[in-house]
Amino acid sequence: MILLVAAGCVNYLDRAAVAVAEPQIHQELKLSYDQLGLLLSAFAWSYGLAQIPAGTLIDRFGPRRVLSAGLILWSVAQMAATSVRSLGQFIVARIALGLGESPMYIGGSRVCTDWYALDERALPIAIFNSSSGLAPALAPPLLTWLMLSFGWRTMFFIAGAAGFVIAILWTRFYRAPHSAGLPASDLAEIRRKDSANVEHVGFQQALWLLRFPTTWGMFFGFFGVVYISWLYATWLPAYLENARHQSIASAGFWAAIPLGAGFLGALGGGFIARGLDKRGMDAVTSCRMPTIVGLLAAGAFTLAGSVSGNVYVAICLMAFGLFAANVSSSCGWALAAVIAPPNTVATLEAIQNVGGSLGGALAPLATGVLVQASGSFMPAFGLAGGISVVCALIYHFATHQRISASVSPALN
Image (cartoon, rainbow, N blue to C red):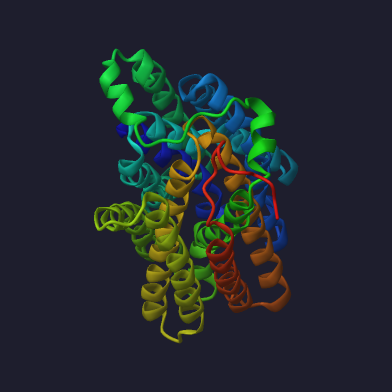
């Protein structure tokens, strides 16, 4: 768990580097807002397209080898960005970063599925997923300090080098339960409440999962979770600088407050799901309901923050919004780990995260286009709030059915 959280933090530091360095990149490379939106979204497109191949590889070969390879690739890509001289070169580096990072969160969820029993799985997944909130909270002040002290190119190099350290540690120390010398009774206890494994492997497994309405509900629902999260992750510093008239240093500080609340929400989602389970709610419902409620709350608080006339009130409201969004994120990841057979979890997470990656790709791009066209961030925040509500309804109506070999997968 310590290694997973550390890897997740490095993962998000690398993702956030462009958003933090946006003013200097904008000036040095002479990019417009819509070009910045394209650059910010390039990572998410490659990340999303690589999800299903990465998921099938993890379910077939295990997270130890696949995550190690991913860590090395994304670290090389991040360090390569230090030498870019044009928008095209930068986009290539970000695409490579997306390919390398694609196994991270689906692989981590598979690790938690392998090591924890079904009714204990939500909390460790939330602890791991909290790195997606902790790193964005740390990124603005830490990366801003590195950028102002050494320049944005050195900032990228340092962030990339950290990935190599995690890759060495992961390869050296991580082992799957069946390779770690656990007694057979412990292995049986972990698997006690799981559905039976399915025989499908590779892309056949992905095609089988796509026959369930639940899979599609998770695909479209997670679009909203990642859309609103990536709106904050990629545009919050620029929003505070341009719409709320904060300095670069001040924006880096104030952006850490909503992003820090996002970390607490990601961690809190696991405790919420665990508490509901302890009160008698089944594992699927205890993950599903906080996902829905969190999305509704995220949309409402985001809309309220965007129309507030006071910058400090807006920051507080957006902090509540990102807290709620990350509750949904943690519980959405945990839902995939309890609603399907263990040997399909990485592939199901991958399908769900393709939907999320579409949201992650469109959020920065749509925001850049809307800001360029309107001269205001309010339409972009309004769109994000509306998407959150729609995706909450998708989760509510489309994710009732468990995915199991004993259940007919035919779409009705």
